[in-house]
Amino acid sequence: MEKYQTETLAIHAGYNPKNGDPLVLPLNQSTTYKYDNARQVADWFDLKAGGHIYSRLSNPTVCALEDKLAALEGGVAAVCTSSGQSASMLAVLNIASAGDHIICAATIYGGTYNLFYYTMKKMGFSVTFVDLNAPIEELRKAVRKETKCVFAETLSNPQAIVLDIEKFARLAHEAGIPLIVDNTFATPYLCRPLEWGADIVTHSCTKYLDGHATSLGGVVVDGGKFNWKNGKFPELCEPDPSYHGTVYTEWFGAAAYAVKLRAQLIRDIGNYLAPMNAFLINLGTETLHLRMQRHSENALKLAQWLSGQEGTAWVRYPGLEDAEDHELAKKYLPKGCSGVFTAGIKGGRDGVERFMNALKLASIAVHVADLRTMVLHPASMTHRQLTDEQQKEAGITPDLIRISVGLENIDDIIADFEQALKAV
Ligand code: PLP
Image (cartoon, rainbow, N blue to C red; front, top):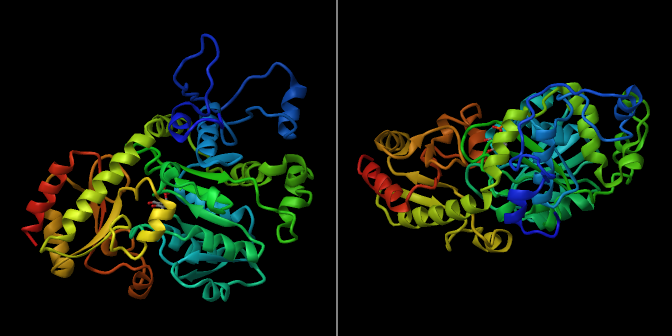
């Protein structure tokens, strides 16, 4: 499928029906599989041949989605997980152990912040949050001997700040470690981080890939180019005692990272994607390209309109010409800047509340990246568990609302915001 463009891959990659097969990817709602030959199953358990053993490890519907997402991102393999949170955790756990250190962008989804700062801290990891806009000389100071990866989002949640992927890739590669990029908000239609030097890409498939708010899911895509044999990642290059001595880099070459993640972590932790969710996420992904075009167009128009309104204190969208990251947006996101942005509503927290309560078409929702327009107040919702100091570090001010612009007619969206701003 590699010769096809993104639009074609979104529809066709991952499933290649043969004569008489269903044209639509079938939902294989089965935990288990039947075999004629005991030796064949033993070979599959030994990872000597591909085949499905049990749906905690693989499933034909989920694997079709994995192949589609790997093709869309330009990676060599992908593993789907039960949520975006699982994808973020496994992407790091696959190459780091207790005592190791992670460098992470400070402007990041609140759930990822909590995962790295609290839960993974309990597991023995430490994390340094760095300013996305800091010069590389400053960022280098965060690197330690035990640092195992750099993690950041292409477009940060909630402010949609554009990551300078090449700068972060340089930081990681100078230290001999991979750059993991959460590409949830950009999607592979707007940006393919692997082409700019990232090594691993993750997604919350719950967002634009599904696009219809039906299914939780995540994915980790292996770029297949990182040199795991540089001495820093023995777990990938030495016999795995938990998998009778498998040496991932020797047996699986470019896909070593993805195979290890499935064979070891998904096997043990059990957070694989459910077939039904894969079926629905695949359906959503088939129209990803069309939706991302319209999300981006609508978001730009709404951001431009809001910028001139009395009730708004400020508007931040990388697609606006006066945005500080507009040049980065032109470089990394030439097709559009996706559908999420932030604005400040006058009157602080009370003004925000009056505005949100007055919305009629747009919903107050904790979700984002859906075809319905949604608004959220991060300080009291998604980032509520963070201290004031942590919120400040993540750029969350009390007047900030996150807008996820949907696919409704833009005039209707603007009319709704116009009437709601009158309540501020
Ligand atoms: N990454 C980003 C950028 C997100 O916005 C989210 C959720 O909002 C996640 C990861 C976590 O994904 P999930 O909710 O599917 O666990």
